[in-house]
Length: 168
Image (cartoon, rainbow, N blue to C red; front, side, top):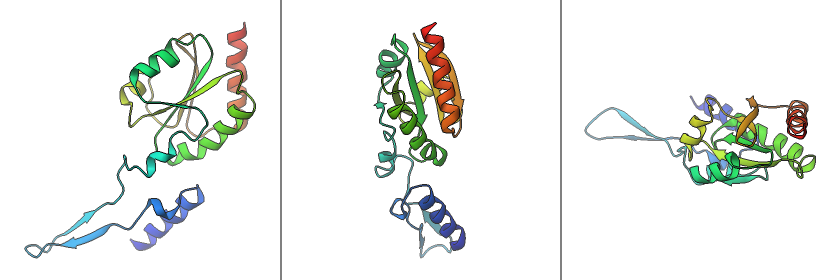
C-alpha cells in the first residue's frame, strides 16, 4: 500500500502537484473495536486544491447566472473550459489552453472556466459528462466540443475553425 501511495505522489509531482497537496491517510484504532478507521485528509472541496481552477488566464465563473450572461448571451465567440481541481487530465490541459488562447487568440476569443464541482447544473445543462471538456460558443450555441486532454495543434485547429465559422 505504501508503494502505491509513493507512486501516486511521484505521479502527481510529475504533473505539477506537490506532495503538500497529499498527506498519508491517518489510521486510528478504537479501543472497543479491532477495526481500523481510515480518515482521508484530502477532500474534493479542499481549499488548497481549489487553487488549481483559474490557471488558464480565463475568467472563473462562479454562478449559473454568470454562465448565462457571460456565455449564452454573448455575441462574441467564447471558450468554456470545464474543469475540477482534483482532475489530473484537467491540470495537464491547463498549460495548453493558456499558451494557445492567451498568446495566439487572446483578442479573438475569450476564455472562461467552469468548476464542475461548484456548478454541476451548468455542466449538466451543457452536456458535459467528462472533464476536461472544452466547448466553444457563439450566440449561445455550441460550435465545437473537445473532450479530454488536448494537444496544442488540435486546439489551434478547433479555434481557427470556430473563428472562420463565426466570420462567415
